[in-house]
Structure formats: C-alpha cells, structure tokens
Image (cartoon, rainbow over the protein chains, first blue to last red):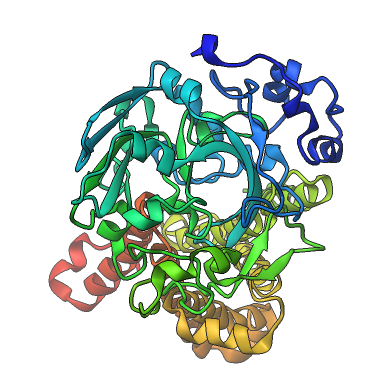
Length: 327
Length: 206
C-alpha cells in the first residue's frame, strides 16, 4: 500500500487549525508535521499504529459545498484517536487506542457482492489509487450524547458503488467489519453479547447520498486502527455507530439488512438511527450533546440538531416517514 | 491487635479510599482525564462507590471469621466514603449531563429506570449517612440496626443501576452481581440457620 501513498505533500500541512490542536497540547508546531508522521505516533494519548499517520493526497471540499464543511472548532486529533468506541477491542473508550494495533490491516480488501452487475474485490491499493480523495469536515454525533468535529479524508460511497453497477434490485447496502478473534480481544470477551462480525446497513438512497463517504483518513493522514483503518463509512447525519469501521464487505441487497445493534436491542437502536433530539434513546435523552473536548469548567453541552444539522441536505430522504416510528 | 496497629490500619484505609478522588482531582487539573471528563468522572466515582459498598458488606463475614475489633470502625469509614463517591457521581451527572436544569433532572430521575435505581440507592444512603455517628447509633438503639439493613436494598439497586446500563458487554455487572450474591447469600444462610433448629449444629456463632 505504501507505493500508492503519496508522500509528504503541501495540502496536508495547511489543514485547518492543525497548528491549533497541536499547540493546545503543547507538543509541536504544525510546520513540517506532514513530513514527520512519527511525531504524531509518539504523542501521548495517540497510539502508534502500523498504518496511521501517513500523509494522503487530497483536495479540500469547498466550504460552499452544502454540508461538506463546517467552521466549528475541530476536535483535537489526539482526542479523536484516544476516545473511541470500537467494541471489537473492548468497551472502554481507551481500549481501541490500547489494543487496535493488534489488528493487521495489510493486506486489505473489500468484497462487493449482491445486486450488482460486476461483483468483485477491491484491494486497498485500488481504493487509494483510483478515487479522488477529498477532505470534508463533518460533525460526528455518537448515540451516547457526545460529539466531535472531524476532518475526514475520503470519497463518496456512491463513487465506489457505481463502479460495481448496482442492479434494479439494489435497495439496501449491508456492511461488515473485519472479524478476526485473534487480533480483536473484545470479541473474545465472555460477557460480550454482540453477534460478530459487526454489521451495519443503509438504504440505497442514503448510501448514494453525496454526504455519505468512505473515509481512508483524517487530519490529512491515513486512519489510526482505532478509528477504523484502513477504510470506514462516515454518515454524518446518523449516530456514530452507523459509520461502520474497518469495512471488509459491502453487500447490495433487496431486503433491509439486519444490523448488529438492532439484533442486540431493536427498541434502542433502529435501522435508520438518524440523529434526532426528539427521539430519546430509551435510557437517556438525545436533546443535548457534549461537544468534545469538554472540561469540568466548560462542559460544552450544546443542543443536538435534527439530522445532526444536515437536515437541509437529507431531510428529503425521509419525506412522509414518521421519524418517531422509523428511528 | 494493638491500639497503634488499629490506628495505622484506619489511617491506611482512609488514605487508600481517598486515592481515586485525588486521581480525579489530579486528572482534572492536568487535563489528563481525556476529552470527555464527564465519562471519566462518572465511571470512576460510580465504580468506587459500588466497590466500597461491597467492601462494607464484606466487614460482617470478615468479623465473623477474624474477630478484629478494628473492622467495625472501618465499616463506618467505608460507608461514609460510599456516600462521598455517590455524591460526586450525582453532582457530576447534574453538572455534565443535565446542566443543572431542574426539569430535565427530574425527568431523567423519573423516566430512566437505571437512573431511578441509582438515585433511589443514593436516597437510601442519605439517612444511613446522617445516622452513622456513634451518638445516633446509641439514640436509635435497635431501630438503628433495622434502618441500616437498608444497605442491602441499596447495593441491589446499585448493581441493577450498573447492569441496566450495559450496552453490549455484561461482564463487569455480572462480576459485581456475583460478589454481592455471595455476600448477601452468606447472611441469608446464617439467618436461616438461626431460625431452623435442624441446621443449628452446622451454623456458626450468631
């Protein structure tokens, strides 16, 4: 995969506020950072990872492009990489950063099957080499009522799906995360009640929506394992668990696929799981969120917006649907 | 055990119980609690409150087998620490999660069963804390004992509070529930054997 990666480039050194987040932690100046990914890996709270931190070649989504950019303050990269939910590595927020490096992401490929004209396999080299990468700054709202602002690097999922020529039966898309017990200690936990591998799904129109992206990086560099390396889904108007990590399978189908969280508790986690302050998670309210980083003196508790603030772009997808029923 | 040893044990336990709190304060000051201190504080204070509550339940069996007088004094201290951590837990919840909005706090306490369970456990601990002094113990006499048996209900509610929150992994809640079952089971067995003469022979001293 290294040969396809573009080495230090100009674009990633002028990422919005990169200097701000590093200065905040008092580590290093942003200057020259793209050329020295090792520095990032050495920063406290940032787990070293075999694939993370290599500079990517990408363009920036234009600020005026609807929804592709927000001027809200970015969550520091170190926070995004140290505070994660990736239950394959344990349920503590710090577990993924501690243990995700046990996952081998090289070689990697995604199998595309089902209602497509040309089913097949895409290896990571193809993915990185043949799609135009773009940086988009999205809000990310976890179902647990915390949120972040993250500069993702990736491409529209639609670009990939089109290449496999979905047939007229293509109504839903099902995704699977890698499942490798020997490298994922969370899946070996006796008390875990998730039926691995982790599965997620989207309706076809959601999957083809321009906001829906496959991400291969953040902050200008390849993803850390704990953030879903080497390739993950990002659906900014849905709760974070829909944005499935470390994807190995994309299956286009006629029927609505079962998802892991639905299987676990359908009452709490619906298929759509659009961010909605008016539909509480049965165990907690969704009206507010803690925008991270939060501190004791400024908890940064802000009201949650319908569709995570992307209503203008996506509300039309759900016209006529009772969102309290199709949550 | 000599007087000086007893004091040493009490000082050590007092200091030990304070460590989780000092770690949180240190973390808050240095910013090492991570990007979401709410979760770190809630998690730590909730865990320590439950752990120390379990420790208070461990005192009676220990006393039965070891007969160290210092244990009874430790129980009061541990109990007060349980309330101390539960109090921080509750205040953090009000601060980070409901932003000190009375209406929302009330709604959460009433509508979310796991929060209700935790809150009732805390409510139970209020009179237990207030009546924890030796003076109150003397004044209440036999009813003090009966009142403080409410701790059994509190620990069951605390376990429920934890179990109800489990989203995908119940290991932790199961471990606490198992330990509490053993500790309460020990009491039930003794109570039962004191009641039915046929097993008195095998029962320990009351």
